[in-house]
Image 1 (tube, rainbow, N blue to C red):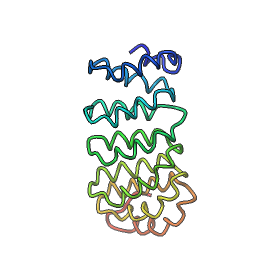
Image 2: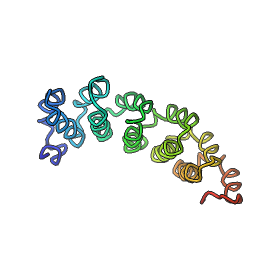
Image 3: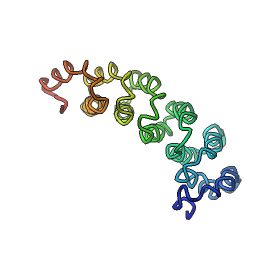
Image 4: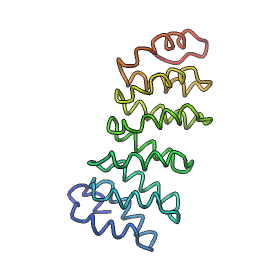
Length: 193
């Protein structure tokens, strides 16, 4: 816990924590994986991705790895493919979305995968979180504008409202959404502008 709280100042401990990330003791393994995120070292990325790919690792351990990957500072682009794969696993997908959102514009590479997931999602809660993540990516999520315009018209008010908010975060590139936003405001189940 101390190393986690020291953050980047604990960089020298990364090799030891990486070693512990594969330890057979589940408590030591979980603590090491959790501590690696706040240290924000690119050297931790391979070990954290390995946890995600470990068929024997349970969902709780994988979620810890996802959270840590979301906090890793440099070399985030190597993390994005590993996180987008997690979108296919119901137990991991909300954590993966939170990690991508935490990266903000640095997660721009994930936008095509997020758009595809948004367009095919049958789960309003998942759709809501995808729209929120796209909004956190901001102007770098410009490619999501057409999907978010459709999201405004979603049967779930929450998805519609979150889509509208995401478009606002994308900014001027979302100008094509103006007619759909006007239409939504005029409808009986309006989305707040």
